[in-house]
Length: 265
Image (cartoon, rainbow, N blue to C red; front, side):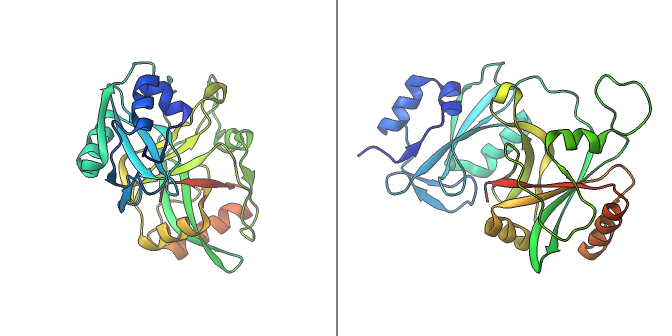
């Protein structure tokens, strides 16, 4: 009986038709595995299972996840993160062939972005949130003048200005928040030419989130992302202080937000 594997077109394109067909036929399927997302046991012969390909600069690792936790997809990571994933996931991965150098599209030099996680109360319910604030003004690519285009650039991507935190912002399709092995890995945005998602922000090392934050993310299957220009929020040590800073930024017109679908658990 062949395994109940999902192999997305993006994964197939990376590993090749021959390897994909072998997986679907059960030749290289794992049978039992530890889900790369929730870390609980899975069995590809009994439940739908996603193939998740982590691609670094030089190597690729094929992992398996419950289909309800992660869809089959290609995730771009640094080589250091990939080696860490191999160590942490253990038997849940299959070392892949050397990844082609064209696997990751060229990305612009990333801005230095501070990311804080916390729970935000909206309409009587707690929502998982990420608050993003750069460490310096962000200017539009190609611009040489002073100024800060961080919020206008995000608004052009579909984020909405927020004047008060009274309702959940609309979902921004094409973006997502990647959680894997119970940790925050990246905020993903649509790739060029409607290709696979690429990292808009990526943690140098996966960030720990609280159990309550992860539980709220699993409940809502989305994460609220708030963004403000440098100097607006600061590194707040408590969630009540973070909420106060968000409210002040919203009141002064210095906050944008969107609800991003959750990838992983």
